[in-house]
Image (cartoon, rainbow, N blue to C red):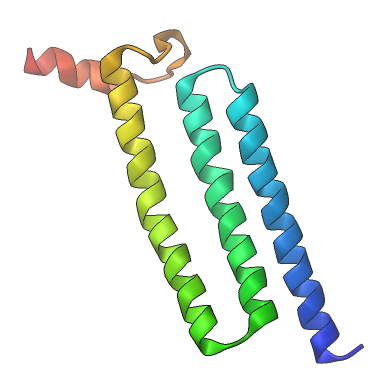
Length: 116
């Protein structure tokens, strides 16, 4: 078994794992009961799934220009996904779309009371 076969196996594992995590994120978006749970499903496994797919693709392609592009895609995803999820969560909270009985700690309610 040569180095190429091992690299192909690692790339295949990364691609398969990334695809499964992305599938889990999609199922979570459909099955979870409330907005905050769906938001969690849209960010956590989706970002890790994309990073695994990018890693598998980088291993398989192997050229410096393509790997640099894939790294940039991964960095921008890591930067934008948490910010977007935070903004969606805050907007949903302000619009009253959050099921407060499911929250363990409601830090925004305390901040809202102190500013009033």
